[in-house]
Length: 303
Length: 303
Image 1: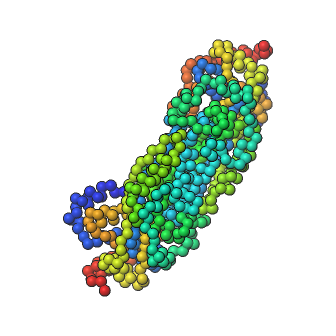
Image 2: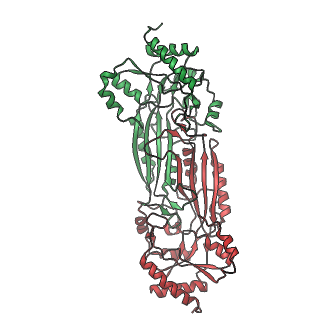
């Protein structure tokens, strides 16, 4: 829910929580054989749109045709956010987005999850994303505008012949390094207000927001984590950009001055945020061993 | 719900139900001072669209950006149904629509409900409908494509960062005389299937359907009804086209061979199909008197 009270908690307990680094195990690995250190997270802004039409649900026979339908107005509003090539067409939406370096694009290509496997994992006939980027890049290093929920009118069995009084959409945008949440929120809201027709009233409720996170995998702590992973898995760890958001890590950096090691062992098929979310027992065992090795490596000078 | 069992009931009881005319009091009058006889009803087709995307709700951070969002795909699909001028852009949608005669347009203009009063009644800042027609014409003599409900993803408090597995829309189209429900259903479904992107799977569930109704206000029964209204209200009745649908009347005509007198006393502010639906007690009293007068007039030869 955005952890609104965490920052003040950190401020109050600052001395007690003083540390060299934070370890968070809320990220993943590309598959059970590839240990991974995550060096970037996407940020987020959340908000909810409400389009208000008539003062009550109306009989769609008696009045339908002479009054705008908020569910149609909402569809038309949302439809104008994303272009056919998968790009968000809101002016200024991509301002400041850090481009992917050639090195990062090469590294991301090395990941063992093929497009075909990803497609099977998600159960879709066809992947879809911003043209010019691979699926791995689209879901980790590019911003998104995602509808998380739609609600309007009648939702029960069968039909009910109404023009709904209102329509709502829950939205979250994922942000990438160097996008400012407040600025993205502003360009999105300005655009939606500008294209909203005069036949409905647009209300926007702001939710939580967090910047993206990007940290060097060359730090002594990161190097210690990579050694621990290498020793436990007997395999070279991969470096990951994670598409999800962990807003807490920005607070750790700002309040405690500490970088976060994102050392997670979730698998793509763990159904994160989906029904039947799970955590693999082998990954649990690996996590225990890696953690033990990490404490040892953190006390050793880099080789 | 479309009264699926009514036709077979009428067939079974045909002899018992044999009659010269049917009286249905499920229509309205423009205001409490203007008695009305309705001579036309709009027809209807109902259906539900489902767009299926990933096999489950997905984490919008881990996967968002590389997979189409069914709620966005649905918005873009629905957005392409209605043009800026309020016309439905589905090819063939208006085929066969009976044009309004100059006489009808003049009669409809005489109704006492002004655009300003309608706007206030509905609680909107601005009316909206198909260009080239008055609001009265739009809501009684022109077909519509109306979204009755939208459902997708998370609908509770706050936010949930998912790409929904599916998105659904409940739709009804109002039809006008000479449109064939089966044909309109076909052109609508064909269009939606044609424009549906390959990244989601479209499923269309058909609901009920009914033709529009149009009957002469010159029949002996209609004339008797007009005399009854005139005598009770001491005022010249108006002739109405009703935007709503009463599918039953088509069954009465087909099975019993009887036309229906649509002699209703609902007021525009009765909140039909809305919360707090009501029926005015004065209208109830007028209905009793008019009904008594109608039985007398039906037995008298036309003057």
